[in-house]
Length: 151
Image (cartoon, rainbow, N blue to C red; front, side, top):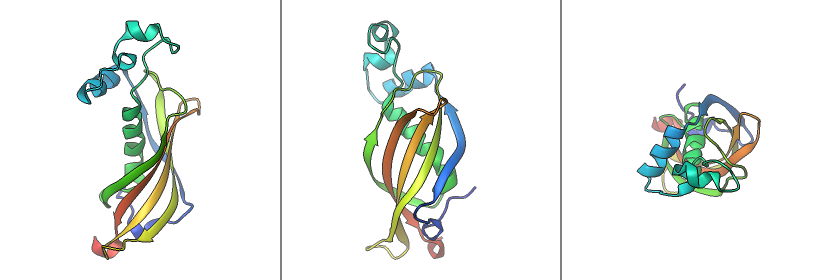
């Protein structure tokens, strides 16, 4: 499904994205090391066993990336010019190896670009839940979106 253009977004629209993702130990280790994050909570099973979690935590930065990635197919695939910012990023509950993540998006606001006649700004609220419905990540994102006539 191609992404939506600026004109296609309606404030208040809700998306429950079909794509889901089960996260693994390999994902966690690879992302943590590729992003130069040697936090033992992510990569050292022996260390993590002695923490309050009793196991390794899935890297929250990867959780955020997966959350936004799961929204692209329904919203911005090929029609976003770029992300302008993220705010109110929160991780209210942990993610562990084997959890399956899903995403929802609400369109919070939109406005014409003041500097580009071919684009508009859309603000999204993204929510990530794991298999039992627990919210594990939330954020707001502003994207610069192509207008239909510019496509």
